[in-house]
Image (cartoon, rainbow, N blue to C red; front, side):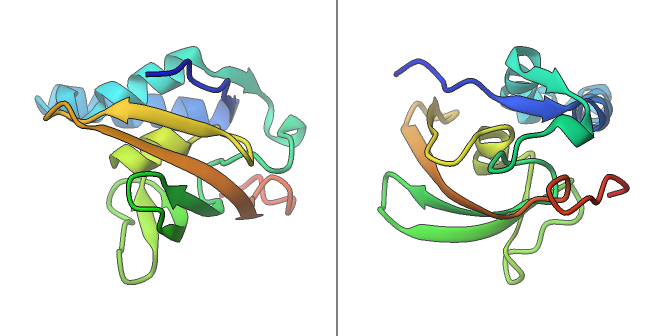
Length: 138
């Protein structure tokens, strides 16, 4: 595996995601949030108004490539419970969601699944980002 691209999170996203991690760990689902927690711990934290454009934040609409299949997908990154495959809403707890949070356009990230397979995605575009749109209330 290669070195992971640096990631940036807003303080608000990091704090909310740490709460999600705590809830799932308390329910005995720590394995489900392990990758997300790794990503949260290595992130550089900024205030929402300091978030650079082109970075994947919560509720961003993202175009990315699945490197295993070459398929280009579009998704909105959402909190658990808001996911909907028909509407293209991907939970931050999914491997793709945990992988893309905090990445910038052009970044690629690889990870190992629980069964040992390597997966990777590349962020092609951040179509819409709440912070860039001045939406700090989401």
